Length: 221
Image 1 (cartoon, rainbow, N blue to C red):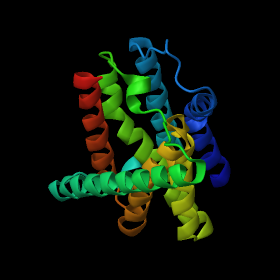
Image 2 (spheres, one colour; image 1 turned 30 degrees about the vertical axis):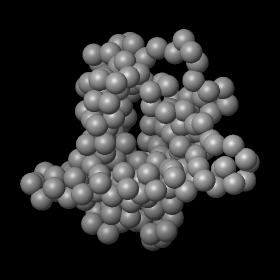
Image 3 (cartoon, one colour; image 1 turned 120 degrees about the vertical axis):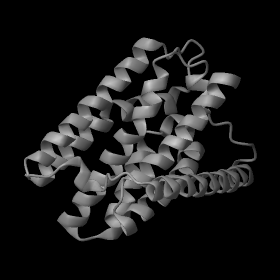
């Protein structure tokens, strides 16, 4: 039953963004794409429903989302800040190396899409979505998925690889190089959670990165 509940939560959470990511991987961003208030609202509602489902699944075992390591403190927030820096250093370094490898192997520079190609000039509803998204991703794809795999299989490697791979899969709209680059940052988060089993710092780190990205899009998109 726990395997079924795990697959149910993860499938409902990532199916839509995964298929969209695969579509954009193949076709690229459309010149007419527009993330208006309705799209951001749909995304926010979807994430809220997924977290409610997670809460229900945990409650069946007399657990709460708090039991995944969601405990707020000043130390957790400061740790999240340093995790965000580690994320940015890891993903930037990986992006540089992968682009050089791409140039060496294929003879031209990779021109993967960026966030600006999809989310430029965000509308008002992008604000609550940006603030809520780190809770959705890190509680479901990091804390819940890793906790269940650790307890069901006892394999730390499997937990880290699966969590990072799932996040990689629905970021494929950035292209292979972009998705692999950002996944090195997700790997940092996974390794931290494996060691500390605390979700708050990775949520803070993810939120910090998303807010920085939103500000860049808002002012320069």
